[in-house]
Image 1 (cartoon, rainbow, N blue to C red):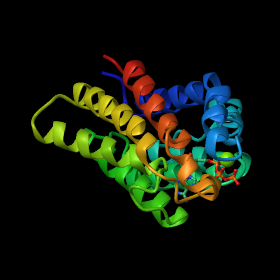
Image 2 (cartoon, helix red, strand yellow):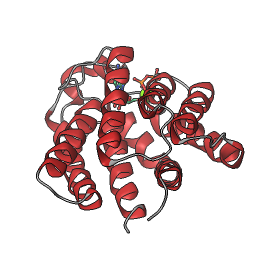
Image 3 (tube, rainbow, N blue to C red):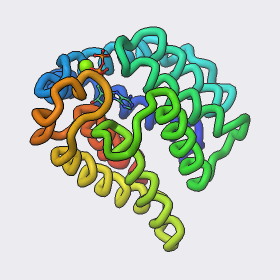
Amino acid sequence: MPTSMTMVETVVRSMARTAAENEEYFCQLDSVVGDGDFGFSLARGFEKVMEEFDAIDRKDPGTFLKKVGLIITSRCGGTSGPLWGTGFLRAGTAAGDRSELAATDAIAMLQAALDGIQKRGGAALGDKTLLDALAPMIACFTAELAAGTEPHAAFAAAAEATEAAAQKTTELVARRGRASYTGERSRGSPDAGAMAVALMARNVSAACRP
Ligand SMILES: Nc1ncnc2c1ncn2[C@@H]1O[C@H](COP(=O)(O)OP(=O)(O)OP(=O)(O)O)[C@@H](O)[C@H]1O
Ligand SMILES: [Mg+2]
């Protein structure tokens, strides 16, 4: 069994790789309705995290995640820096100083990240943002665990639900961020942030496979 610290490192590394490998794709998605900088912003933020990765304080997973949040906020531009930085900061705060985290802790951390992003950005569900992928992820993960599914399989199911939810943002009209300036034209392609969350969930699930 990997320790929680190792798991958290794997999660962050996998998210960073997803941002790096999909920089162009995420920019393309953002350029359909927004200003096309999302992939660039996300990749630069996670690139900096990987540059500093080995030196980040590993006192406990919470401390590690809070530091990741600070790095992302300091490097990642535009709207995404504060939003993703807040997500990591809140998840780290929810983990507290526990050295071992259970699946229920992971849910509390994801929920804290979502609450923080929602408060910071003021978006509601259905506004065609990354929240429309993150909320169904948490709901599915919670339901699977409650049904007795073992944690990894529960997260794998949640990752699938996240992808389906991200695809469904295609039907929505953007009400937040620069994409909202395009109104009805934003219908017809999936939200870039939601797709990033979905691809990250898929890759994290694969990377954490026992
Ligand atoms: N207020 C918000 N709350 C939650 N997510 C948001 C919000 N605004 C934008 N997003 C997410 O961020 C993605 C775009 O990120 P990006 O950093 O490109 O922001 P932006 O709105 O284009 O603004 P800017 O380019 O000025 O930073 C969207 O696809 C959406 O998922
Ligand atoms: Mg943008």
